[in-house]
Length: 269
Image (cartoon, rainbow, N blue to C red; front, side, top):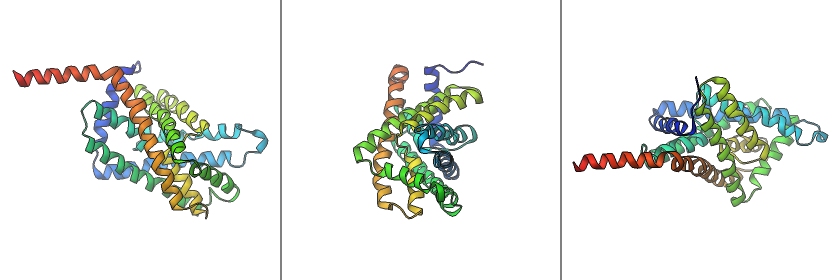
């Protein structure tokens, strides 16, 4: 069975976006929690692999960490979960296609962001701090990574967020285009690995690593908030504009306009 072509992916993404805003409150809470937890577990794997790599290995340690990070999004998209950055793409293209109201889009983003944060912080506290998986020999890597995030200026974090969700949203987009598990895994793996290698900022990933450093006695919740705001906004632009809007304009705008014309003609007649 062949995979979907770009215009067909746009249609699938619109349908997915419509489904996301129709989820029950219980589903949003559970799937949002799982989404944040899975991304955090992928980041935890990154820290555990790259955290004690010898300095002479250079960037190869980062490569090893980036190679395991995608497991989080794989679990979400294949196993089940809701992730803010993916919804910034899927719900947005449904909005541009006039299938979803802006109020529904905003509500979905905010609710998923909240439950993603709960899931990410759960992993940061219980697995990272309580069990100690981000501390001990791995504390230096955890703190150094978190400090690099919060040290970025507002605009640097914002632009980095754009780059991140351009790639993350593309991973989701490509996953929608594949019809078998192997195709979906490969579609997810390489864009996610690339964004981690580059060092772009992901709002939900930061909801894990910065609190992990805070729980260890470093940084503050003020640092966390000042980072999350610009990264959230940058991720929104990366997913909603650089993926959803661009592909909507390329593949769906004329079709939506035709549907509007037909509806208007029917009303007049």
